[in-house]
Image 1 (cartoon, rainbow, N blue to C red):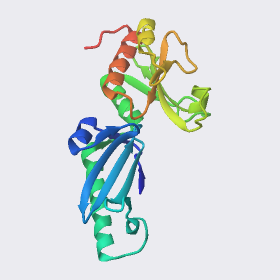
Image 2 (image 1 turned 30 degrees about the vertical axis):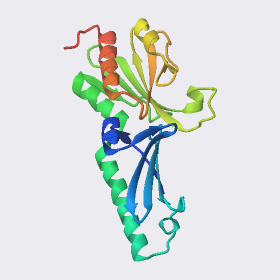
Image 3 (image 1 turned 60 degrees about the vertical axis):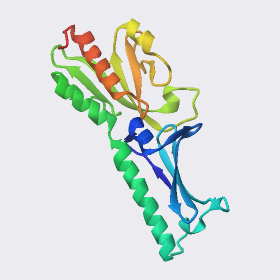
Image 4 (image 1 turned 90 degrees about the vertical axis):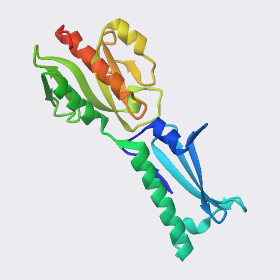
Length: 221
């Protein structure tokens, strides 16, 4: 069984408390189900998927009734037990967040802000302007990853946030994993931040504050 973790963001502390351990591919949890059966739950290192298997510890083989439509009282019991465990993990250790919506809301609540979709060709692009001087301090975009990073074969859309910052701050942040030179922006004064499960939300909010201050020259309380 495999589940996609769309818009679900992990609490590393809670996952650790739940019993997950690190391995080379991400996190793993092994729980006894009784009668020599163990459930093995693996979360990939990018926190995009959960893979669930049930293993017979005596034969070291997969417990096939878990994977088939064959119904017995015991196989139904095992499936229910595993589903309950997975649901408990999702509810306990993950938070449902849409990063773009969360950050747009933060901008609106933190500063006098105007949010617009100025381009008919790119309706998913949203500019964030300070009402103080009508200047952008943030730009949200969705772009194919391979266009943003030409050496990649990944064609899926990714969300990025462009912020205007002091060039020295940008230089110190660039890691080409989460923080990149501004996409289709001035590389010296704009930075692009990849919005995914590795993004530090609190850090991004701090940078939004800095960007607002940078374009308005106003101090932030």
